[in-house]
Structure formats: C-alpha cells, structure tokens
Amino acid sequence: MINKQGLWFVTLFSLILVLGIYYVTMSDDTLSKILDSTSPEQNAEAVNVDVDEASAFVALRVNDEEEMLKEMNDLQTILLDESATLEEKNDAYDALMNLNANQGKEEELEKKIKKEFSYNSFVKIQNDQIRIVIESNDHNVETANKIIRSIQSLYDKKMYITVKFQK
Image (spheres, rainbow, N blue to C red):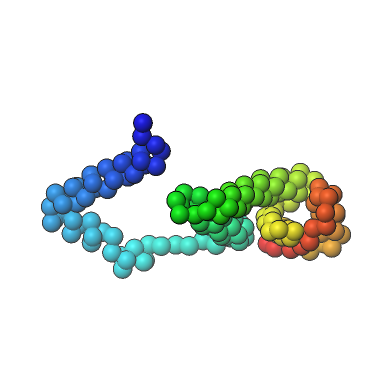
C-alpha cells in the first residue's frame, strides 16, 4: 500500500513532468508572447495599491500565519527526520500541539472581545504573554483594563496582557 508521502511525491512529480513536457513542446512564438505579456515594465503602470485601515490587521494576521507555518514546517521536519531521537520528536510533537492550542485560544479570545466589547481585535499568545491589538480610534484606558480583566479571568496563572488601540 502506498503511504501519503509517496502518493504526494508521485502526484507532484507527475505534475512537474506534464508541465515540463508542455514547456518543451510549446512553440517559440507562443513562448515569446507569454514572456512579453508578463514583462514587469508593462504591468508596473497597471498596478494600483489601495491601503486602508483594515490592512494593518490583515498584515498582522498574514505575518502571524507565515511565522506559524514556518515553525510548523520546522517541527514537522523534525518529526519526519529518521535521524532525530525519540526525545527530539516528542519535543517537536509537544511544540506542535502547543502551537495548535495557542491558535485556538487566540481565536477564542478574539471572539470573546468581539462579543463582550464589540471590537475587532488581533490576539497573539506567546508563553505567558498575551498581546491584543484593538481596532479603534478611541484609546480608552478603562476599556483596556476591562479587556485585561476579562482575559485574565480565563487563566489560573498570572498572564502579562498588553492592549494596544490601533486604527
């Protein structure tokens, strides 16, 4: 029976092989048309970038996702490495489970803030630190304290919680 890794390898290799054959059999005229249509000089004039307030939150989320995916890939590499010791694999597995648990907690905290305080937020948990970015122009200290108390009530041990207002 074929394992998942072998099946993925065969699938991706087949795709690369088909694309390679397509590229080799493509005529020079068609290839030059494709290359000319994707030249950066022509597309530079057509690019329009609209930046709004929500893009800061999107940038935070994308950056967080990229970091998490990179860390998950590193941990999965350790798990799949045949030369890694059992202890290294166990540590990598525990770290991977911790990442998944943190991601679930972050989403839960964002929903709690949305429900209780009606603010869009971004939450990042690292060890005993929780960083919260609130989407609001109003920098209200009382609201920040209420959010901190609300989040701290979910934890038994002392968490270091910071709240930042950003628009």
